[in-house]
Image (cartoon, rainbow, N blue to C red):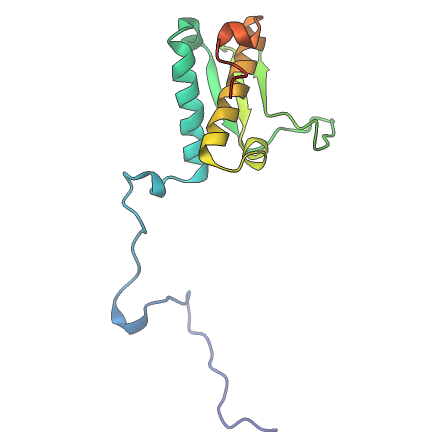
Length: 147
């Protein structure tokens, strides 16, 4: 069957959704409200809040770098659902401070809401700081393990 209307060809450049001549859409929220922050930025804020909470009790944490990475590196290891690390530590070396690494995606997958995520992030930070300092998590934060 012949179609009397030829197919519309796309013009050069990307197609823009500018219906009714109102211009391009702006951001949903202004940059200063929490809605505008990406998930990665919100996660980094949770880690920073946890670190600041611990630094009040342990001032030597100011000498430790805290990093957020998306996922752990395999380095020849394989992980199953139970063995995927949520964080890790890197000992200090010549000219480099010690580091605590928190893995964002494994933590996000195990939590449902912001409050649950904040609690798990703090737990992981406490565990990694305890490992780095050679202490028990309960010594680093007396409220460790409480709901």
